[in-house]
Every structure is written in structure tokens, then in C-alpha cells.
Image 1 (cartoon, helix red, strand yellow):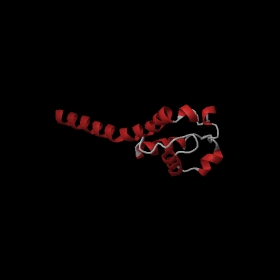
Image 2: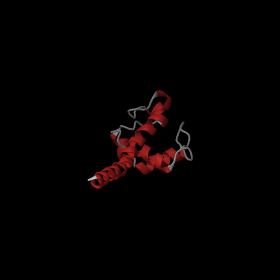
Image 3: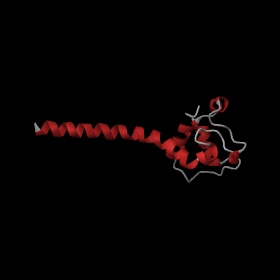
Image 4: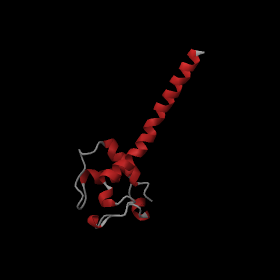
Amino acid sequence: MMKKLALSVVALAVIALASAPVAHAAADGKALYDAKCAMCHGKDGVAKPMAKGSANFNDAKWQAGMTADKIVAVMESGKGKMLSYKGKLTPEEEKAIAGYVKTLK
């Protein structure tokens, strides 16, 4: 009986740990965006006055023309007033932010 209980607990722990990175990665994109990007690009993707000239990330035309890879390229090279984030974010963080930006429709 104790063996079955122990195996059940271990199985549940493995399932919980296996699914945690997926949920965590999705949350990271938003959290990183909120911490690194929202101050200029707005929490909803609408550029604030300090980012005048920046595209609104929730614009359908902009979204259609931008892939996550293109967004990462802009983050790494910088554009306009935005300085490069290359070396300041990990590739995984860049991808998470880009993925989140693509949800701002």
C-alpha cells in the first residue's frame, strides 16, 4: 500500500515538473515585456509619447509584417531611440518577449 502511494506521489511530481516549464515560459514573455518594454511601448502595445515613431504592436498591419524572428532582430540591433538589447537578454528571453509581442493583437 505504501509503495503504491509513494509511486503515485512521484508520478504526480514528475507530471507537475514536466508541465511547469511550459507555463513558466509563457509567463516570462509577459513579465519580461512588462519589465523591459512596456515603459515605452505600453502594456497594451500602444507606443507611449516617449516612443514617438514606434509602431503600435497591436496594429494588425504591423503584426502581419513582423515575425518573432524580426522582432528579436530589432531587439538585438536597436531601432530609433531604442538601444540594442543584445547581450542584455538571453536568446530565450528575447524569444519569450517576441512571442508575447505577437499576442498583442
